[in-house]
Image (cartoon, rainbow, N blue to C red; front, side, top):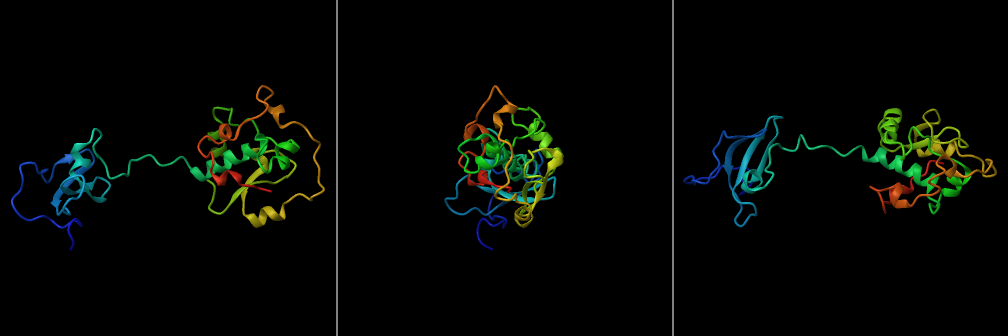
Length: 209
C-alpha cells in the first residue's frame, strides 16, 4: 500500500497529533495515516462521518482553517437544479433578448413568458420548478401550441424528435405584437440580465421549436 493511501503510520506519536476518537462536528478521527513527503496541508488523518463515509484529509483542513472541515461533504448544499434553470433562462432569452438568434421566432412573434414563471416575479423560478418539475436528461422545454406562449398548460418536457414533429409550418404566421407588452415598463433586456448565472454559456441557446 502506497504512502498516503490510508495506511496507518508507524513510529512514536507526536505531541501535535490529533487523538483518535476525537469528534469534530460530524467527523470522528480514526487514525493518523502515512503522508507523502512534502505533501501540502501537513499530516493526514482518516476520518469517519456520521453518514458512514470515510475520508482522508490533511491536518490543515481539520483544525488549521478559519472554517475547518466538519463533515465529509454530505451536508454541502447542492446546486439549484442547474439544467432546469438553464431552460428557464433560455426561454426568457428567446422571448425578450432582441439579439438572440431565435428572437424572431419567439419574442418577435409575440411569444412571452407568463407572469407566473416570469423573471420579474419574485416567485417565478420556484413556480416554474413546481409546475414543470426537474428537467429530465435529454429533454428540453416544448410548447404544445407553437403559436402559444410559455404557460403551465402549454408546456412540457420533450425530446428533440418530438419537438421536430411539433414544429409549425414555415409559412405559419402569428399576428405580430410586441413581446414587451407583458411588461410595458421594461421594453427590452440584455443577455446578461436574462442569464445572470449563464452569461456566455452556449446552453442558453436552447431551442424548443
